[in-house]
Each structure stands twice: as C-alpha cells, then as structure tokens.
Image (cartoon, rainbow, N blue to C red; front, side, top):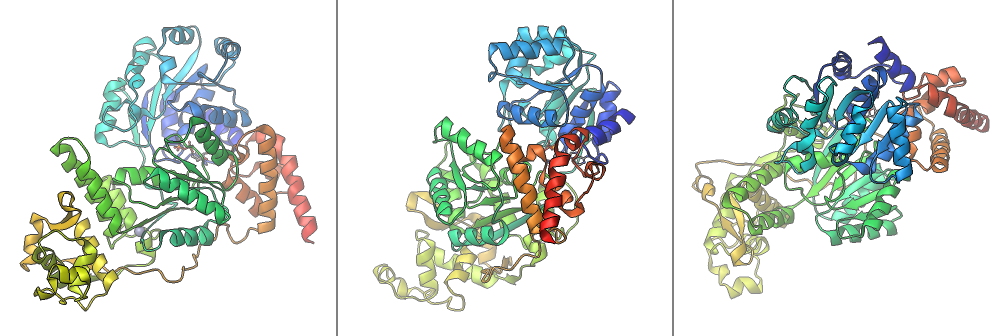
Length: 600
Ligand code: ADP
Ligand code: ZN
C-alpha cells in the first residue's frame, strides 16, 4: 500500500484516498476481485489506475465509450502514466505500435472496447502479454434490463475463464440490487468483494421550481448564477433544443443544440466544443450525456419533466463531477404533467408495462410536489438513509408552505364531475370562478350549482390545485375525449370528505434571490482567476486537449487561493503531481508573479 499512496501523491498529486478507494486498491493488490458501486464523480478511475501502475504488467480497461478513450489517455499521459488505447479510430500502423508496446511491457494501462476485446485475435495478444488486472467500466451495460445494455458485455465472462489468475474489478454508478446481482453472475464475479459507496452527491444543489415563464426563468438562472459556466440544458423535443439554443445565442451565451436528428458530424463537433472550450452550454434531448466525462459541468437544467426519477438522477448527476458546487435546476408545470401522462397513455406496450411507467412517473411527480427535503426523498428512492434536511436543496433553503386543500380539492373534483368529465383545466377554472365566457353559455354551465363556487382562489391557485391533483393521480387526462379531465377511482374518499389533502403553496419567485454562493470562493481575486484560466486555455489549445486535462478547476482555485511562489509550493497543490509540476509549474508561477506585480 505504500506504493499506492506514493502513486496517489506523486503521480496524481492528491493528498489522501477517498473512501473506499484504499480498500478497493488493497483488494486488487492482493490479487482479489472487486465490484465497485460509486456515484459519478466519486473517483472510480483511481481504483483501477493505481493498482495497474503498482502491479507488474499492464492493466486492461474495458469501456464501451470509445469517444472518451482519447481524453482518458491524454489525461493519464499528462500525469506521466504510460497509457494507450486500442479502438477503431487507430490506423493499422498505430495499432501495431500499441500492440508492440503491450507485448514489450511498456504500458501501464490500455483501454479497449468490449467488442474488440472478445475477438480471438485480441485475446491471443493479451495471452502473449503480462496483464496486471482487468477493469470493466460501466459494468451495468451487462444488464439486459437497463438502458445501456451491450450484448458484447455478456461475453466478458471469457476473462474469468481465460485469465483465472488476473484480478478483475467491475465498476458502475448505476446499480440497484438486481443489476448488481446480474453483474456478479454474468461476469462470474462471485468471489469479488463488494464496495458500495453512497449515492449522495452533496455538492449538487437541487431546485425544482414552478414553470411560469420558462425562458425568462432560465435566463435569470443563467445570468445570476452561471454566466460563464459550462452546463447542459435538457428539453423534451428536438425542435425545442434548437430554438432554445438559438435564443440563448441571441442573449449572448455560447449554446449549441444536440439531438439524434442532427448529422453525426454536427453532433461530434458540438460535443467537442462543449468539452474543449470554456463555458459552452449544450441544449439537448436525452440523446446527449452517456459518456460525457467533463468534470466541470456547473449546472444541469431541465426545461421539461423527465419521465422517471432514475433518469432525473442520472441526468443531473452529470453536474459537478469535480466535487465543486453545481446546480440541478428544473422547472415544471401542469402542462408537463398532462403531456407526459398523454405520452404514456398513447405509447405502445402491454397494460402491465404502462402501469409500471405510470408508477415511475408518479414517483417523479411526487418529488416535484414534496414540501420536504428533495435530497432525502431522492436517496430514499434508492433505499439509502440520509439526514432529513440536507441544507442544499430548495426546500431546505426556502421551506415551502403547505395548506389544507381538502375543500378546494372537493370543489375541483365536483366541477370535473358536474361538467361531465370532458373539459380542460381552463374551462373548469372558468366555471369555478363564475366567469361568463361564450363557452360557459354554450354549454349552459352558468346554471350548474358549481358555477362560481370557487372565487376564493385565483386562476393560478386553481391551476396549482389541478396540477397537484393530477400529480397525485386523483384526476387524469382523457385522451379519447380531446384531453378532457376525468376522475380517477381513488378520488372518491376525498370527494366524500373521508380523506384530507395537504397541498403545496406555490410561490412565484418574484425577484431573483441573490444566491449566497458566488461562483468563486471569496478569498480569490477574479483578476488572478481569469489570468490562470487564460493560461490554461492557451496550453490546452496548443496541445489540442480540453482545459481540464491540464488542471481541474479545483486545482486552479487552490492555485489562486494559495498563490505559490516556488515550484515546491506549486507541487503541494491538490491535483499537481510530479510531472505536471515540472511541465506547468514555471508557466503558472510566472502568471501569478505578473498578476501580483500588475496589482501593485
Ligand atoms: P468517476 O469515474 O467515479 O465518475 P473520476 O474517477 O472521474 O470519477 O473522479 C472524479 C474526480 O475526483 C476527478 O477529478 C478525480 O481526479 C478526482 N479524485 C478522485 N480521487 C481523488 C482523491 N483521492 N483525492 C482528490 N481528488 C480525487
Ligand atoms: Zn434538502
């Protein structure tokens, strides 16, 4: 283990292990197998990189994400690790070169895609080489029930059969119990020690706000809190991603659309700009995300409601991998609920499947409507215990009021019933409020006893009541009858007064509250910060790599805070190993010196 700590400090420049990295590494160094479940940004990579470096031979990393291999290898090489990859982007000659270095023992780490690994030719190459370990990344791809299933993963049990003495480690950030069991049985990892780190992402702040003027709300969020930051904005439709990106462009942001309808050239160009340039925003459908390993995504915004908590958690999880503060921000409203319910009803599949999907959507809606801590609810959903108040979500920071909505709910349900369960929310509200519209006269609704029984609430308050009734499944949208609202069986006790209901009091955020958190810690001078970023940008451009491969934001912040004067001091910064100290120390020290001189 002294070797491992040495590598952590000297090669990667980090002071200490995060739990359970040290235990995982010890297991592999001992020759054992491991299954590691850690949240995104938890630090999975070091779990196999360090033992691969410490052990004799080369570590083979199996990853489905070819697009990421270049980045991972660049990043390792920057730290002085002998890394390479074998995938379809190499030509014959490059390939032969990599194979030669593997055979000759000149590599610490080699990344290979699963389809390539299982070819007889590759297996025989590995047989002729000295292999220190196999790391199976994104191990949940072996699960046929998951979204990311890859048939080639099923064949990875070959590793156990062909290389019984080489330790194996499987890693994933997604794993309910069932997926975990599947990983173990399919990859023949029954002997593996399991390491389950929690799911929590404490640096992500969750905010779910009522949608009233989506573009303005988004603009205010971006201007107030993320004016120069990289982020992802998710929309439900392709059209909306393009319109939103174009509009953000007019507002002075660098925003690029991304969806499956764009050509693959455009998609990879947009993705590359997102990775390589500072502060680019991607406006995307869910087609974007898998395999985006950018550490400094400062926010993930949802303009539309995701269908399940699982997708919400996965998408928001792309923010703040580097551990610095990040935002998961979402707006949602009545229309989202109606639209998603309709989509589910209209979708194909068995009744059983539909019921399951409805159930998942209900859980998502529940998260939107709760008045207690969002993080607590999210973690509960994944069966994880946590404090009742996290202090870093909207409901913890600005507690919401609830009110006894029993009477209002009864009125709303009655008006649905009395008008024959075939009208939309706007008309129902007109009836409740006793408004005299043409439609009301046309259907003689001004003669109904419910006409005008709800003047105590305004339009928005009634919309809120209907939204919450729909979110909780008391009413639904009738697709066969032009989207009219209809009662559901379980509303009876409420209607008969045998049940009460607490509703959330919606507050329209009037003036944007200035967040207490500023993007930079207070002791950091913005001028120096910008100068350091500029220096990093220049170096990154010259080498054709993303800026975070030179240094992460956290390292740059430490630099701006400590303002090192010597190479030794520079080497103490978190994220600065020996190689980076020699390579970049002098350049950055000069920037710091100049910044100081100019200040005086
Ligand atoms: P994952 O693969 O689990 O999403 P990564 O391996 O990419 O996460 O690590 C996330 C971030 O945490 C990276 O920036 C990495 O350099 C950093 N990191 C990992 N382990 C440590 C550590 N022990 N000390 C400091 N930073 C770490
Ligand atoms: Zn909270």
